[in-house]
Image (cartoon, rainbow, N blue to C red):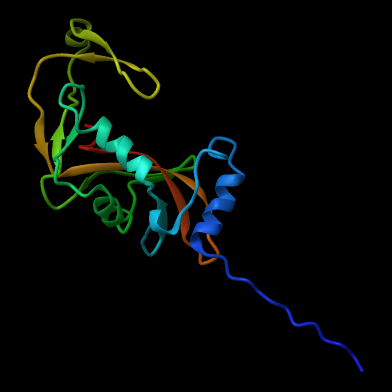
Length: 178
């Protein structure tokens, strides 16, 4: 009589699948923990949107003393991000999935970046950003313009068993790239 072994297939939870991608990523390994409550879902994508990421975005884009775009205080960043990942991305390439200048359907903040001539840029003041990579930017006096647009930039972590792409948050800000 032949013996048959029963094959047991364990279905991993989303957080387990995403954590396995993180653990294989030299940049994220040991720095990020995937928790079920931090996962935003759509038909094509799941986005790891941790409280730490949300706090970083709030801190960076809610301080009017810093240059750049600002979110309105009442905006629920997780809700906005979940709505955006349900839309078609603006671009997918080089391991990035981006939604640039997506219409959020309501005023979500104010745009603090503007385009101008090289001559005017040369006359602007240098400012070193106090967080992140300590980037140098040019600043000038002006008014931030209210905007319904939002940009969300993510990194691909891998493809899940169900065929959706798992993403990690790079940044999110009011406005586009004009």
